[in-house]
Amino acid sequence: MGSVQDLEPIEIAIVGGGIGGLALAIGLQQHDHIRIKIYEAASKFSEIGAGVFFGANSIRAMSLIHPSVGEAYARISTSVGWESKKDTYFDFILAHELHGLPTGTHIISPKLSATERHSTAHRAHFVDELIKLVPNSMAEFGKRLTDVSRDENRGKTILKFADGSTAEADAVIGCDGIRSVCREFVLGKGNPLSQPMFTGKHAYRGLIPMDKAIAAIGEEKAQNRFMFLGKGGHVLTFPVANGDVMNVVAFSTTKSGVWEGEWVKRMEREDLAADFQGFGEECQKIFSLMENTDHWGIFDLSPELPTYSSRSLRLLLLGDSAHACAPHQGAGAGQALEDAYILSHVLGECHSSSDLLAAFKAYESVRMPRAKFVQIHGRRQGELLDLQRPDVGDNLEKLKAVIDVPIREIWNCDLGAELEKALAVMKAELEKGRAQSSVSE
Ligand SMILES: Cc1cc2nc3c(=O)[nH]c(=O)nc-3n(C[C@H](O)[C@H](O)[C@H](O)COP(=O)(O)OP(=O)(O)OC[C@H]3O[C@@H](n4cnc5c(N)ncnc54)[C@H](O)[C@@H]3O)c2cc1C
Image (tube, rainbow, N blue to C red; front, side):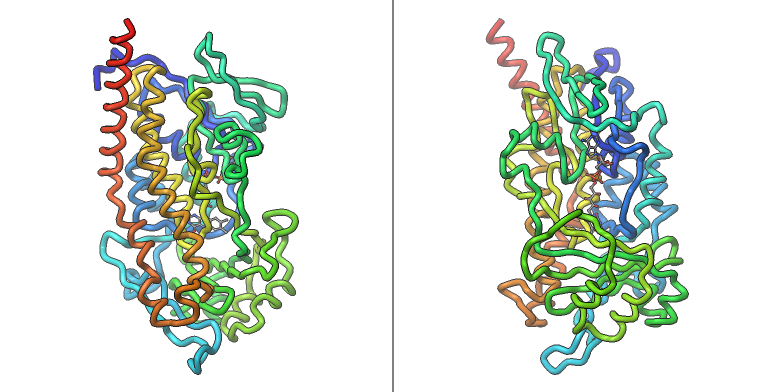
């Protein structure tokens, strides 16, 4: 799209330095004419939560953002303990007796093709690796965004922060998570679509040192990926930290459909016991050993957002701020990585700030339908795994037929083809813009 000499400097402000914001910054660094600043509310980059699952698409997106991200992930990611289970998605088993079948009955172990292999990581380890790829000078901390406006005369978007300071950029990318402030500026304050929704699910999370996990439930279950399915809840376990630790997430369904208080709370063991009282002995052993615990309300966003951008503010959403989804497919962070891959490339194609809106449109054209699919199926998968999906319920034959169908579509996305589609949209937009300006001259 032109020579390097044609490129004018473009200032991009990234609001939020989670997985999405950091990945975007790493991708954009490959374009010398893009000047990047990350504004992070916290006093440093950090991650809460323990294990994170990355599907094949997410792992591919890492290397496409920059090979160094893929290499870093390879250093800290964990597959399963047994070679024979490397091509197993999860072993799904019954968490309690059902239809006369005993607790622990094997349900299904979907097999992965060579291109569908996935792995898991400790969140903090992954974020630490991303941080190493972002120069210190690129980030400002303690910058909680409160306001976004546009100075049209100067062609700049103005950011205001809670500490009273301001900054400006040619465009702002809101990577500020599910409780995004940027989203309110895109959709309008008070727009109900801007509000996160409680999914009715909540999750108890924790870690168990691998030696203790093996002593409690044996090598096969401790060192590999297992899901214990029960009515109204499911428990998933997988190894992280190179197999030294077993990660546990126990999902349950609220009776009230309401979540009160903080989104992430201290885990109370009596609540866990009450929610999973019908679950079998192995689950109870797992619960008794959980360390570093917390308790999360599970929220998502409507998949019906009409846009991810405010063209007038030159403000665009990425990651959970645009399309937070229920985590039952282990796909949310992967979607932020896919966003970062597409956006870093289309922004890199901008010759000047006047090309930015074409890049926004190109990004939205491929990212909105893809993320919507992931959001819709995130909720449905939660219902399915809790044996509550209206069309499946606790019918295990029906469950087996659908358990890995949407997730395979998520894993098998051709990200290179998605970028080609986005670049074609961008080219068409730029040509349209040029045609319009030649008519008005
Ligand atoms: C229980 C649970 C389990 C999950 N498991 C998985 C999994 O296994 N696999 C997977 O792929 N995904 C998983 N996810 C989803 C995943 O965690 C998210 O999709 C991902 O972290 C989103 O990254 P992000 O960068 O968009 O947002 P975040 O990680 O939320 O980062 C947002 C950043 O913005 C900053 N910020 C917020 N507001 C402001 C402001 N006003 N000004 C400046 N900075 C601000 C925050 O401090 C933070 O650093 C899970 C989610 C949950 C809740």
